[in-house]
Amino acid sequence: EVKQTLHRCTCLRNEMHHFVQNVQAYVLEVLDTSWAKLQSGWQKSTDLDQVISQHDRYLACVEEGAFLARGSEAILSGVTTLLGLALEFCSLQEQACASSFEAAEAMQEAEDVASVFQAVRSRPFARSL
Image (cartoon, rainbow, N blue to C red; front, top):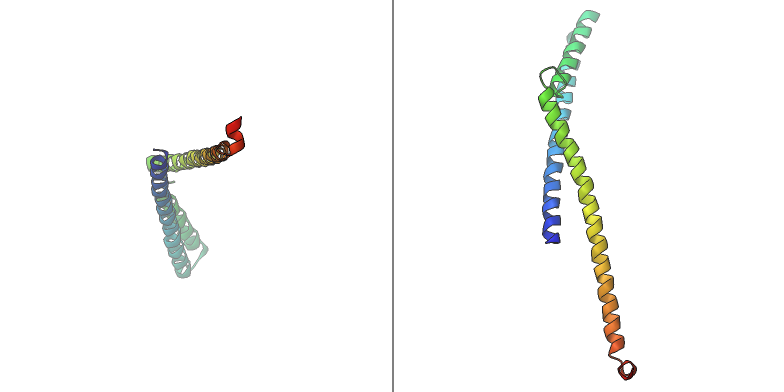
């Protein structure tokens, strides 16, 4: 039962890892495309006002794509909550795995002691006691 639970936890952690990677890839894509648009806009700019305007568009694009713009609060809150839960779950899973490994080692030590006990008990001098 413990082995199945640890396996299910590992599968869930893998799903969480996949989610985090997708969020990261999405944000990086937003940054990359926004940066490319900014550079293109700068090349076409002929004065400082146009450069500033392009930069403002860049910031607005990044804010919107990273769920930081007005109206995206619910999405940002949901993603932040999911990431926080993933961190909490990983911490708990690490504790559970460590405890399981400690328990498995203790069980192995107990089996080793039992084997030695059985071996000593079966010797002729122990029978005469």
